[in-house]
Length: 395
Image 1 (cartoon, one colour):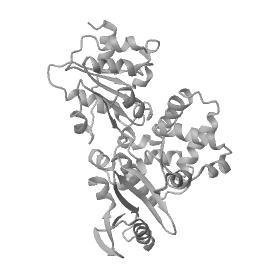
Image 2 (cartoon, helix red, strand yellow):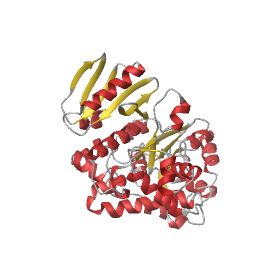
Image 3 (cartoon, helix red, strand yellow):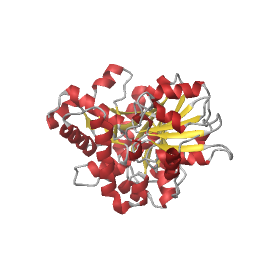
Image 4 (cartoon, one colour):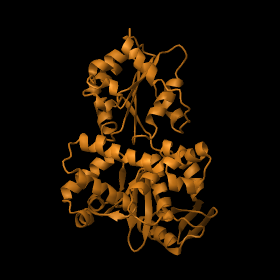
């Protein structure tokens, strides 16, 4: 039986607050089983804990469900494998336990693998490290871990939950607490930013030059969506190439930024060209940006970059004499996309798509804009104009 102190903690963690359904929930439910482990990963405060709790509410009547918050100060000094055993005491194969921020337990991978091998119970884990709870987790479980990325609200979720429109989404971003309390935006985003830097990077990787890391984070977020090279970073901040690479990797692992490389069929060419770097959230991009002007065009482009990431596309950009904002790749399918925050896209948007398509023998491309849906064929390339907000909502 559970000890009295653990029972009291479980009661404390039982959420009574109102929550909102996330679009990914139904997909996750179908994978819950004692034959594999579901892991939820993504930025801090993006809603992983809420999704995990809501999944417990969907479990069949008569089964035991437990939510364990491993970040609770009451557990300091006892974060070990024994704690996992204690919280899973008396659970059967149909019962479900959530371990929130599992990466805090050293050796958790082995414990989870044994639990899966013995069909101990259904297990859901969450974490805020991209590396720890994606490739490394899947490897540790020999392919029996099913991962789902939980990002801040999409525009579709933002609109459904807050009843607000696209302009508000561009200004606020999708962090749930920020979206629901826009008046607290600055303070909340500041706390999220500092928490990610300190807990997920500086403390975890024992960073000595935290000021350099912070400056790089601000630099990347200020220049979100622009082409950035290690040479530019060195000129602006004085960081060596190796340090820049390492720090960018850390910022990615903490879900503050992600990279969009240059599209090329040559891997060497793609790796050596400048990359675009985007924030995982529009609000965070604006909080950390040192820019004095609001560029809605760049924010709209960033919204599309985040949505492509959410939908699981491998995303690139392309530039020759003209530019293509995104080359969205899924398996062997390639879709060139330009984004324009106006009803009438400038001529260069079409020219860039046609140049790319003719060079790479692609027959279809998309322009996301504020105008009505139209289709035109130019030089053998089908150019489909789609309403940006409709695409963000329906795909």
